[in-house]
Image (cartoon, rainbow, N blue to C red; front, side, top):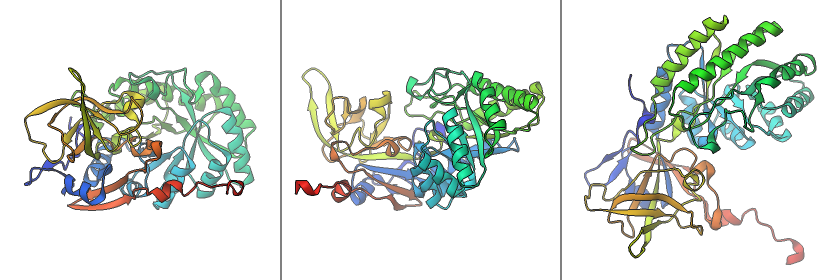
Length: 442
């Protein structure tokens, strides 16, 4: 089977230029750092479009497929425009994500609103902007959504999110499909929910089921198990309640290559498993082939992104670790501190030098746990060097904070030797723009 972009460690346009520096999208990274400052998020447009095309090609053998990009991985107006142009809809989990994809010009009928504790204000916004589907997570939301839809004199199109009881081998914080989870209806609760939808809630229309089994998934068998459970339940509900439910949303979760040791499956491998599993389940449970919805997020955006840092101070512990500090850290990439996530990196201005040192890349923030990369071999890191950390497109900017009152970093899009700002760097004035001194303190 062919490889796909999610199996790359670096953006597909990465190369060493005539000056001996790393370039991505035809742009010298050292020049980007000089022009826009660091830390700097860089998104390679060709890589981003490439993985979207991979997905569409991989699933071309099944007619009824819809792709929704999981916006929580990275949500910006600029990236949403690109992903929408590639034919994807969006899975959103907040008013902010809803409004962002709306401002990108996306067809809101291709948007699904997900989440385990949607607020009334968020639901109202989704109804007003015409979001196409709600993935309903619990009994409270069923009641609230029906009430709000009735107040707007509309019918909300919904999927029921279920907990399939599948546990994939990822970090426990990013497992969402096992039974002891905050997400979704337990299988034993579905009939109670169906009774409410069919007999009590007049402003809800059910189309199918939704499940999500985790993130950074490397084992393909879990999709087979998930599809069997979803199709079996869809068949049972159609038969028991005389319905024609015809949608199953299997979530996303395909892994990416953060380090050389990672070996994620390609989109073509999971497509083969998913399509063959679906065909078998449809025959086994005697239903019409349903529309299948996928929600890739990390595997769409992660590989296209790198983060640039400027190296500053260093510290050699006697007979121990050499710490090399950069001008960012856990506020622009929380994943190492949260998940013990691992990354690979190169020094952009001397990637080919062979005299390597083993160092630990430390962030600038006032936490001992602010370590970006523990133990990496780099060529004599010096003050002023530009460090390029690969595969940072997903869950870096989207989880960024102003910890230590530091401004959030800028993001640029690169393609064909051109760079464009798609998120401005925050300023000190931005940081205090929402602060208010009460009159009584003046």
